[in-house]
Amino acid sequence: PPSPAANNQDHRRIMKHYIIARHATTTHQTSRSCLTHMRIDESTTRPILLVVAAALISTATPDAIPRVLLAERPQGKRLAGYWEYPGGKVDSGESPETALVRELREELDIVVDESALKPLMFASHAESKFHLLMPLYGIVNAWKGEPQGAENQQIAWATAEELDTYKLPAADVVLLEPVKHALRAARAATEMGT
Image 1 (cartoon, rainbow, N blue to C red):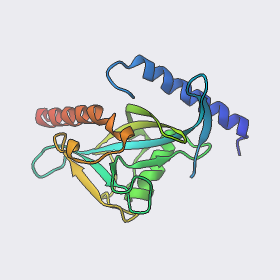
Image 2: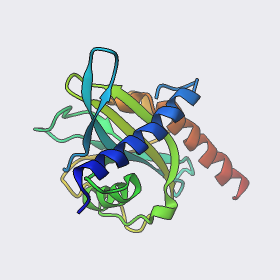
Image 3: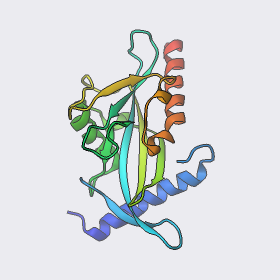
């Protein structure tokens, strides 16, 4: 198993990549737990929680309008009743892509190949006890199986217009525009027959 020092180096490398990407972006803000520490400002150090999520987009809908899958957080969990993009925590020594493939299998009973994961955006959100860093990957029609709430969570398929009607955690809210853009792009590609 990797040493704690190696894990910290891996996390610092990942953090550096995402921090550079965040500063390069001007239009968006962007267990199994994999925690490290990051200086948030000159006086505060918070643990970083690295989670990963997927915007599963289906164009195979009866009305030909692409939809994205949302999962409701179950009762008894933090933010119960909120809707979110499926995914979860990245285990120590795991890449975000490997973690997402595992989480989608556990949560939705679907199989996704890592090659189908397309980086879409990421969220960086301060919580009271930690700082959440969440890369979001887009997946368009590239999974095996029918998504279902394998952990007894409710799921819903939402159009770009319907997304604003769902109660989302703050970290997911900042990802709305990139997801809506991906839905519109999927619709345009479907209409063009590509």
